Amino acid sequence: MTLVGAPGVPPADLPGRVLALDPLGSEAFRLRLHVPGLGGEPAPGVFFQVLCREEEARDPLVRRPFSVADARAVRDGVEVDLIFAVVGRGTAWLASRRTGDTVRLLGPLGRPFAPGPGGLRRVVVAGGLGVAPFPLLVRTLRGRQASPDPVTVLLGARTARRVLCAREFEAAGARVRVATDDGTAGTRGQVTALLEEELDPGLGPAEVHACGPEPMLRRVVDLCAEAGVACQVSLERVMACGFGACYGCVVRARPASGGPPRHDRSCLGGPVYDAARLAGVEW
Ligand SMILES: Cc1cc2nc3c(=O)[nH]c(=O)nc-3n(C[C@H](O)[C@H](O)[C@H](O)COP(=O)(O)OP(=O)(O)OC[C@H]3O[C@@H](n4cnc5c(N)ncnc54)[C@H](O)[C@@H]3O)c2cc1C
Image 1 (tube, rainbow, N blue to C red):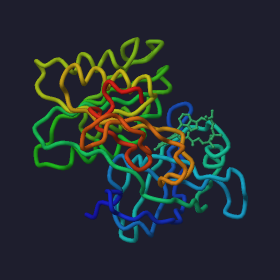
Image 2 (cartoon, rainbow, N blue to C red):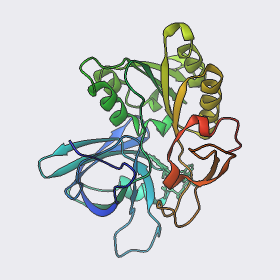
Image 3 (cartoon, helix red, strand yellow):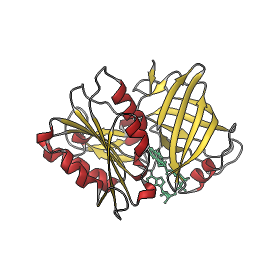
């Protein structure tokens, strides 16, 4: 299997053909595209800049970033899933696609999750639509060894109808715990309260992967720093180009090689960051 989306792999502007667009929970969609030009399965955590309009139209002008939710190599290309909710013009256009339509994808872009070596408990923390990159990550983690590491997925959502992909994670062999703001599913409260429980050192060494709203990610970064647990977070800053030209998506992060925090274009340096680069930094 060729994995693409790792640093050094040049992105391409590719046509994807819509295979399916299915509702997911009460407000999200899962779009499945057949992408013949993609050379292999994208690595978990990378994203595509998606042209959310007809090519001859002008609005919305810039492409919109979406994480690869899942991907399967097929005989003549790769099937790529995106998970999204309608929040504006671009996502409304995506939600109006029909089977057989073409959607153009630029990518894969960005740095993927880089799970450490085996032998750790894997804890995945997803807030709301931050669940998007995790079907592929969980499947990859569960499939990469003869006896895979245990994976626990912590899903946070406002309410039960917004809890996404729980059954899918269970089917992939993960343990799933849910927290909702209103208590209609799982425990009432924030998903980071579940993470605090999972970081109990008595449970054995762990590694955390997280994506979701930035306040949630800040708490995840702090909790993991306090617990001395390795953590990677995927940041979803608003971005225009996706390949380092516009500087719209900068965050402050320590350089990977060490030293004081600097501005970093999260489309290039991220979207996935080692939490140690963000801990104690106003990012
Ligand atoms: C690397 C990356 C990966 C992403 N992956 C996904 C994904 O898998 N699924 C998904 O649903 N969304 C994802 N997003 C967010 C997604 O790109 C935006 O929701 C999308 O651009 C909105 O486009 P629009 O034209 O519909 O809305 P717009 O009209 O552009 O915006 C509508 C509203 O959403 C706000 N908004 C736009 N982008 C963001 C953002 N990044 N963070 C917070 N608020 C935003 C705007 O400020 C505005 O208030 C990702 C973002 C990044 C940077």
